[in-house]
Length: 86
Image 1 (tube, rainbow, N blue to C red):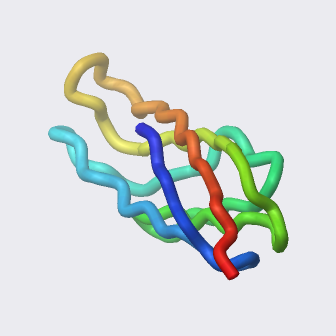
Image 2 (cartoon, helix red, strand yellow):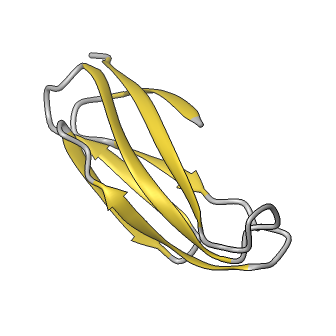
């Protein structure tokens, strides 16, 4: 999964996590971003870039529930490019 966002400094981007065939019970951040912060809320994740940051960042999350392919929680990397607009 790759996300692109254009934000004013300090604003955020929300990701809504899709449901798996086995059902999702929530998400958990598995790898924190370097240039911002990430918080999980139910089946959503909110990324907020550090004020003044522009460039590439990434984080990872785990979708809890059963994945239809291997019967275990699904792990996803997320790559984000942040552009600061005046």
